[in-house]
Length: 397
Ligand SMILES: Cc1ncc(COP(=O)(O)O)c(C=O)c1O
Image (cartoon, rainbow, N blue to C red; front, side, top):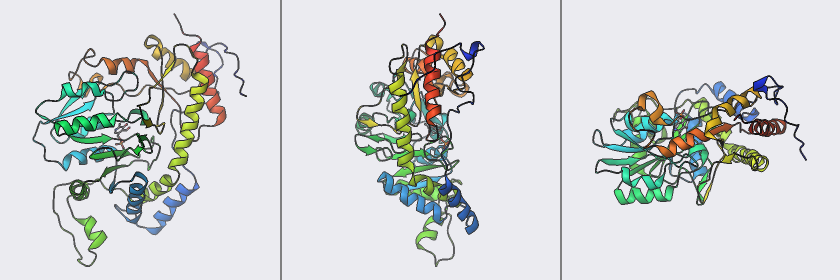
């Protein structure tokens, strides 16, 4: 039984903060097995790209996801770039991108000379509004990039139904959703290509890193060349050791990962189910203790989906959103707002109006994120709940 202290004066007004030591919004989880994996690999002196640890990580991740090919890359951004590089779409062909996402979902097509068309998202969870996809499709549309905001899968059956109907290529930006499931299937298995992130903020981290995932032989083969400067070094390494050289066979860039990070990926993958379960325990705790707070709501999970709880969002009254964030931060809980809808950013300004993006704006204006990560202690979880209750019970007029 947890007893919450009586709400006192708000820290933002000079009162005593709920958490004397500030609680960060995210922290990677690392233990001895991670430290040892990296140290052993440094000692092996195989530190360059696409080494045996990278290949082992790819094999194990492919098994975990249930897919044919995993290509470990230096980021999700480069995996998204690669997902479009391997295709030969006509210049300026259109790609549909949800308006509430990280810039990289749009950079993939943009870096490949394609045109991005923004699609609005659901006001209750930030995922692409599937009812608005069809009206955005024109004769020039070639692809769509659904995103799993906060780890909660997009409505992929509907996305894939529309993709089949209009012959579209689907690159599923699963940056945030490793281990999440949609109707019993893991994200990474639901589209033509999926792209994961292993950035330091993600559930499974290699510091920086990502993966392009596919079951498609042709896409995988070209992506392997293009990831390694357009060379066939991968097949030289894997099955042609006697030849003594490799050839330059395509265009490309350098998207491979160091062997050190392959080793870190393996160590992280071994505990991903446990790390995701810890996040789920924290989410359940927050939900149990915050469900009756007036004016506070939770993000709606997609029907048939289970999330990996990459982020824990709350929806609060738009009028007080920034005030609540500042008040929580003063209490020592480093809540934040993330993302800003694409069309509100300098680079994408003019691509849509607030009125056209009413779902994104409604979601954005209410969203706040709370700390969630496996190393968040029981005491810190209690403090987060206490701070939210304290602040929400003292909203200004
Ligand atoms: C939806 C989405 N896509 C892409 C990225 C980019 O990932 P990376 O930093 O690995 O390039 C992020 C990072 O936060 C993301 O949230």
